[in-house]
Image (cartoon, rainbow, N blue to C red; front, side, top):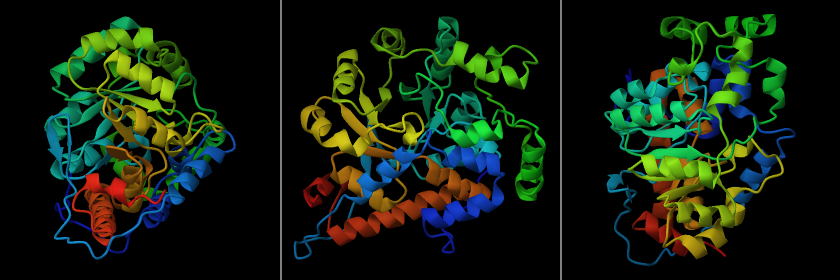
Length: 386
């Protein structure tokens, strides 16, 4: 699957912006719009970026320093880097076989890859290509039978960590997706067909891979279900409510590490602790659900101050570089996840995109930490300019 050596890095695409531009030229417009889009007026996207850009770090250049260690331990496993690949739905729509490319790259370079419930690859396939290292992101099914079966499949695949997303009580109001009539597989409107034909590389690889479908959920879908019924199926069957009562049976059934994803409220983090969760991901779903919502960095300081000794605190939403990773860690996050940047990488470089993007972020983070003269990621909090 992945034809890149573990040290592959394309110097012509040295940052997220370059990957984004290259990916846009290779993806159909409706797929790129889905990846890029925020909610309603997309003010939340700007807010996420503004709060990250406001973080400042300070060097102590004359202190003794040898080298920096980028590794980080989570749930008894030492990862080589303090960032992972966030769950992104419909990845195979944006680039064929994207989940497999990214899962294999993550396993090879020893970082977490989180597979979305609504991915185009099955959890069994991703467990195979990641050699049992991938995590799984669960939307709580309305149907308890489906939930129990999914948990059995996740356990049988020996997936080590379960991530439950709680910040999708409604479908996000994303203007471009509404305009494009986005569905899985994509709606065959004339505009969408023309966009596909204008991207022959994408079209060729899609033809080889087969039409993108939600492979993990396919066993639960009615046979020959019309495309226009997919949203209703998702709403009525797959994406059930997530509150404390509905999380309890998941916590009772799942014996491994449990991560609650999509919190920005101090109150919600306290509830996650009382549930017995092992970690939370401070996240606003990449600003895709609530346009007027807080960014994770807005509430991180008080959450870290109160709860850092009771639960692991991760963060995603708006991170695009190794410098951003350093800033989030300096603010107190134990670990970080990036989503869009990795899909840009695969869109730009295909099979080589996962390895390239990990190495790009690693180089950026290492340079940042060496400039700060941090011996390990735990020292970054000392570099924060308050």
